[in-house]
Image (cartoon, rainbow, N blue to C red; front, side):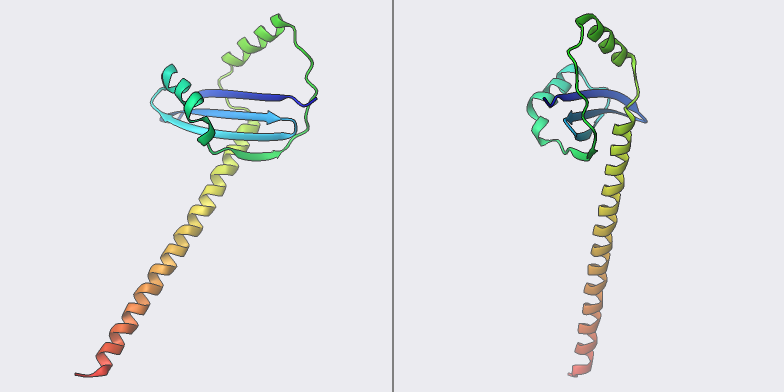
Length: 139
């Protein structure tokens, strides 16, 4: 039986508040980073979860071995939840996945920028060639 584990962590990173959404379903792991800006109110978080959840861009990280999850004692689960709430940092898998996502976006941005510069350069060259032809045609 495959289990699904998901967590949504809100934390302060630099000048902004961010939310990190992690989902592990079997051996499939996804992560998504949401930048809130100022500290989000509960109603903003609920609105994000209820209305904009399907629009979030999730990144697939890697195949991770799935663990069999045994049913947990309610008191033990309560303690684990309390421990998680006191934990302020992101999981290392999430950090790695977000770094990978950032690097991928950076590469895409650079390639788009390079293509745009080349197109601009070609356009200017064609314009110069056209002007030169006009000069040589005569009166």
